[in-house]
Length: 421
Image (tube, rainbow, N blue to C red):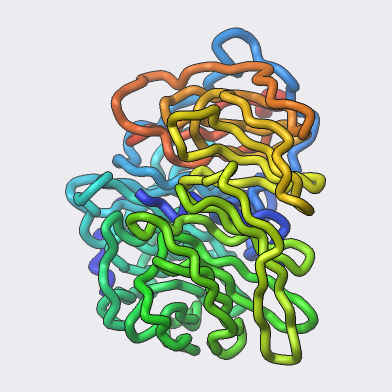
């Protein structure tokens, strides 16, 4: 079944928040990874009993799905279906496939992004029986997750008078209760909350003078104040999640305005890391319904591009953007002190499950690494099949005893846990 929609790199969809306040979106029983970086939007899998090493050539490849279109969006998983998006027939195509890799439905969410680094970015978000997705050109749609039937749609660039970006919109939408959070950018606004059943505007924040960043928004709560945290083209901002009031703007300027990182909130602090400009950890101070931030430490040792950073046991793990040095870095969360700098599989993205980091290089090599600040030992590695000149920028996913990887128009499902029944 196919539905054609007409909803009226930077890859911020590819950035990472760990231990945020964001509550899980609503999903059914079975393996669940219903949005970018999982149920809690923290990129930490709760899977256990997974192997601590792989045989030569990697774990068993169960299937390859080859009909999802070209793109860099990872997958979301809910209620027996796997969702992603890709460029196909000059459209941004959302695809639902089952756990055996068979296509169940597709929906065309407007025109494809064919500019620099053509392809999709944002990961579909599943909330109960509905799917929410933002195309690189600003089409936000709500679909029936089981059938792909369109429920509503709006183009947020047109609706809010915002401008497109050099590498296109890249966020994965955030669900906050009965609202969908999206970030069209200035000049009219920065962050917008839409009613999730109708697409009507609940609130919109003031403009900051910045265009949108390439980041996905994070929800945090501190001292009773609920906040949306995201990055614009030139700053980290905090917005009141209940009314859209701008709480603060902390300038963070990068070459080419590549603010891609989804802010990482933990214990009263927020961390960001971007290419060239590097990392900064900030303390959030809340006074009633007002808030401000102040830097705690900065580091140029970790300048994450769009592969994400994981916070585990008081340490930050991620890859460096600079090509003239070793690529994987561990920093102490409290002090920013470097714990290690190691080559690993090369610059890339990661996820975490069962004491291990799953590191995917942008050159199609998958590595398994113990999550410890004592060193970065690649215990096992393997190369993706069908290696080509495209860059494997989609973040890996570990869910339901499987490892899901994407390169261009292909999704690979590997068996990690016990064999499927």
